[in-house]
Length: 269
Length: 251
Image 1 (tube, rainbow over the protein chains, first blue to last red):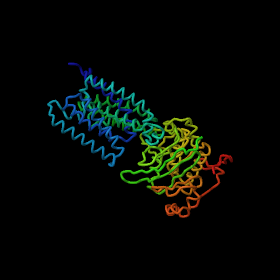
Image 2: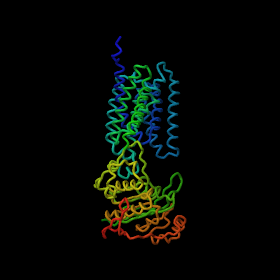
Image 3: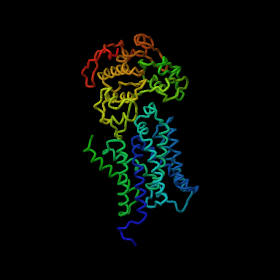
Image 4: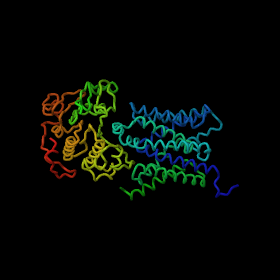
């Protein structure tokens, strides 16, 4: 029996996974907030439950199924929104909940003894494997690098898409690439914070960073830092008080949001 | 220098979801010319602009332009989310071009705003910053979609004077959409009156007497006369007149 002061291996893996995720989620989440795509992120996350259950049913790697479904939904949405007759949020609501419902139905149909619905809804960072960590850091680095490469055109189209297009930005291609990166992040994050809480990882750190950042790049980095702090805080809290880890992390982010909001009032620009 | 127009739309028609928005519209802008697009709400002005900018494809007709035509575009509205911390200088840096950020800002008379947050700008300041971004690319053609909206009457006058001066200085073509008939008419070379199709077009003095133009605008502007004033001075943003050199005068 190890003492209380020595943390077991799974905690070490959880810290690594959560930290990596926070770094990728910060800058990506900043764009989610700037483009008012919170509901879009939610839709990707809810639909990824369908990805999870499909991978279980067809016995393929979990990440393959989730990335596949999230990517399909993301691309569908980008095209759909271009010529939509329905309001964007209505469309998202339909897809989001249909995805969630189909996921839950598939889950009940396959009836595998080992499947734990709550685990997918709330995530389980403590069950992260070495392979998952490889996914997070390998895929995460590629995602961040890609985001860095399209940073300026993406920011330009976030500010005004038509203006960016007139100035020669390939708006459609950049948007697709961004959404693909987002789908990938959602897919790896689902395992850690769960289907229901993924969007918070994207939105809350970015929103918290707003009050203390003076430029877009600064906000993105601060969102990463704040996200990382919240992940660590959540892990510590959940370890010592035995509460679910994903929700504890989200509460940590919310706490940081409140703190920077109070602090930010003094810095007012 | 080519004799052909900078940009030309020929027999442009546009249907969106079976609704006819534009029908057989001909429009062109030549180098150094100011063309103003007027028309009631829903006349298809913004759609026509989008067709010319190739942001949308026409159902019929075609758009042709100079090869490598550089367009400076000033969109109708700009809404930046409050969570995006963006300074004026950073906003101008989202594009690149031969004109530096301080020069572009000075050109439109708002050099002091470089470090201001975009969301903290007044209506008139925002329009000038948008114009500065369009100017950064040293455009051959400026496309301005309602440049004076959200600007008070005094500011509108200044803004149109500024646009006229830019045309004189840069020798670029200007295509703009406007509602401010009285102010705009005097500085315009060609007015195109649009209501799904081109009702009439030509020199402002002739267009105002056209029966279709009168029919469209007599409600809005009961005593429409071309308001012409001598551009012997200009205004700074804050108002006081500045004497111009003779060769810089616009009209």
